[in-house]
Every structure is written in C-alpha cells, then in structure tokens.
Image 1 (cartoon, helix red, strand yellow):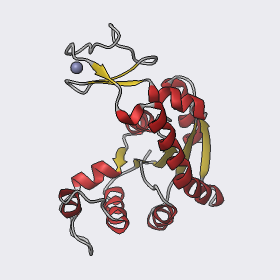
Image 2 (image 1 turned 180 degrees about the horizontal axis):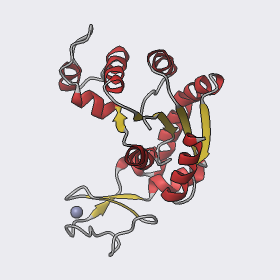
Image 3 (image 1 turned 90 degrees about the vertical axis):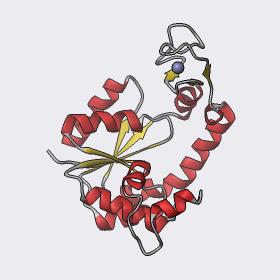
Image 4 (image 1 turned 30 degrees about the horizontal axis):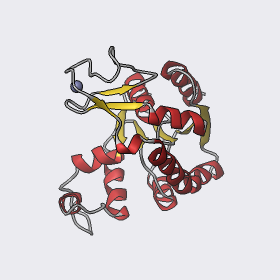
Length: 207
Ligand SMILES: [Zn+2]
C-alpha cells in the first residue's frame, strides 16, 4: 500500500525511528528536508539552486525548500515525510501540492522528552549514538565500537533541550492546528517502547 504519511512530533518524540519503521513496513520513501535538499542540490529554482545557499552557509529559503520537497514527494511511490513542514505557510503549501493519507502527531510528555534528549551521548571519535537509559554502552562513558569517549552534545544539555522544545511548540502549534482543522490529524501516544509506539501508529494509519 502506497501510503502518504506525514509524521509530526517534538525533538525526542521518536520521529526518525518511527519513520524508518514505517518506511520498512510499507516500502515507502523516508523523505526529510535535509536528504531532499542534498539529493536535489543542483535543481534550478527561481531563487537559485539549494547548493548555492548551502555553500554560502545560508539557510535555504522557504520557497526553495518547498519546491524541493514537492519534487521529492512527487518522485516517491508512497512516502513518510519527517521534519517538514516547520511553519504554517509550509503546511499550507504541502496541503496544496499533495494529498496526505495520514498526519500522525506523536504525543509525548515534556518531562519524557527532556529525559530522552538529555540522555543522548555520542562517541567523540566515531560518532556512534547511545542513550544512558535506552541504549547504554557496555561500559559507561566508553564507545562499544571504538573505545572512544562518549560526550553530551551542546544540543542535548538540559537548557538547550528546553529551548529546542519551546521553539518547537511555538513554530509547530499553527502547523498542528492547520491539520487538525482540516480533519487530517491523528494523535498517537508516543510514550513506551519504539515497538509499542509503532503498533499504535500502524493501527492508526490502517484504520
Ligand atoms: Zn566510537
């Protein structure tokens, strides 16, 4: 079944993990803004190519991102979209250019999100990812793969994580409202194991 699914949720809600599970289950393309931009870096738009902005170290402007995402979606035979739309105008654009089968919002309590975000550790040498609670290394603070030191990224400290969540709520509230008003929004409890959450999403999508 070629579903067209949009996955929404805060940082730490598990969008990446669940997108991969959905893509595997239904043989869908996992479309993220970053991947779509890299894959279409030389696509000409009215405003220039994505590469011209990325190489200048500038944010790729909304109209360019919109066009790239539209291209990635129209090339896909079913997709799960993750990390887009981030603003109301992007959400309105998305509704114009594609017919979504399901918009799933992963609902996770703020305290749980903070736990998940601040528990992340990354290997300073090889970049492998760990979590002190959900995916601990064999020896605390040491990478299983290469023996490197595990560090906490600046983004994952409590203060930064809190800021990221605030920015998310501010930007995404209008996006959520847009899809709720359109009658497309399905809220799924995003707490528990990745397998439990996936079962809930699958039931919601197939319902
Ligand atoms: Zn390592």
